[in-house]
Image 1 (cartoon, rainbow, N blue to C red):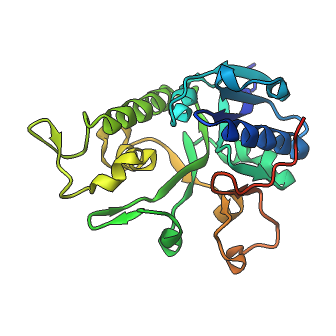
Image 2 (image 1 turned 90 degrees about the vertical axis):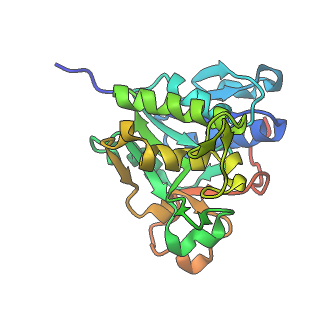
Length: 247
């Protein structure tokens, strides 16, 4: 008899103490709406003040702004739901996300074309970001997913060092097709891996059902919430969440 996969949430906070505080708020909100939730918290040791004990697993990280990408392959769970620290769970449906993966490798919320204007630099002359890396579910038991998470981290760090880019000339990035402003975004690395790296052409990708509920940005107009079921994850920008949990 095969053992049931372990399932849990991954939350990461690095670089700024404010993100640690937001992450604590997020973890509490997860546990408010999923009483069986297991959470792995990845953060810097210098931030820890006792509140990190709300998490079930604790991993210390460095002060890089995208420690999230390093953390993805270190999850202690078979099936993991990653949620950006500047989010808050607002609905009991949060616990259904793991089963929604339904045999796929990855499940994201899309960057739909009609909402592209909400996301900075999501379009350029030769492409458009189509996948949002702020909330997603993945099955790390699959070796292709393990490789994907490690490559996302590797290529992004090389990208920021100007040592990798989709178009290189004489060892330097050529920005004529993919503009330099995309260089800062791990979302661009994600787009390239899913769309232009042949290693991942057969990776099983799906999107959340009723995706807007699962990654509701604070800038969205209320009429775009085309469901009466309620928002599952409210996604703010940086410090726009009023933190409820102080101790």
